Length: 344
Image (tube, rainbow, N blue to C red; front, side, top):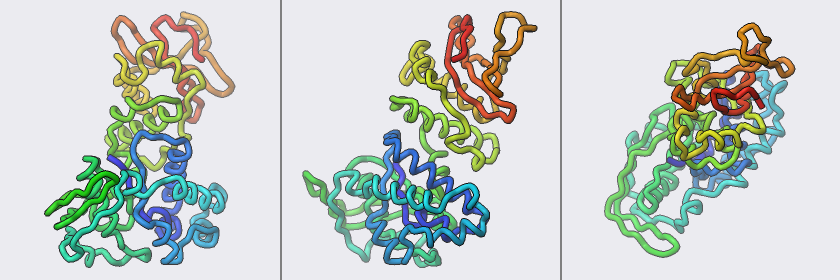
């Protein structure tokens, strides 16, 4: 399932409640990093004419738009207004609109026939507005032509409903190669309040199969960890992309022991690593010592101590090696067999 970014998402730090400013900024930072690293684990698109719509409402991303909220929320010592503006402009500049992203030239339909549940007359209080009929129709068109679901990321719309039933009659979808005429299109479209909430819905197993670099691996582990936190009733706002790191040799070590994508132990590895990061380790954590004796000192790197935990307990006896500081911050180092004496 893809994500469609709305104007409301882009201006959320300027219009949300003061106690939500930090989370709205974090959400933008997460999305910008995913886009900047060119991570293609799931499709990301923009609403139709997003920038035009924002400009018409007087919310073009500038320091002035966000400064007041950031100061009042006391986030100015953590986040730079200029960095926030740059991140937003990067998102908009590097992301295509939904139809463009799916080789759709346009969709024509009977304006009077389009119906929504709940109706837009009930959700018309946003300062940005809810001119999303075209985007929702485009989401239906993508589902029809590509069989691809897309969720709308819209924090204001989510306040009223976490999904919208959209019905469209007498439509013609124009692609680069054909015209598709349909008497009736109908689809339930999911609404997410944030990028983080969208990431809670993604299929991490499918995503892991597409991983081809350490950066995309970190995104998948982040998503899986979020989902484990949520399933255990824990706060997901505390988890950021930089809440853990992957060592330089970590990704390569997965291939040596069949933990890489589409391999024998890929699923059990993903679950083991994410549960560890979430604070719910699947197996016991053991100190990784300089020797085999329990009295030997624990390996250390700066203020970090070495640990290991089982990935499998079969004959392979695979272990996940990692460093942990006194505050719980984790650096995943490498995977090895049961006789592995080195942490990288």
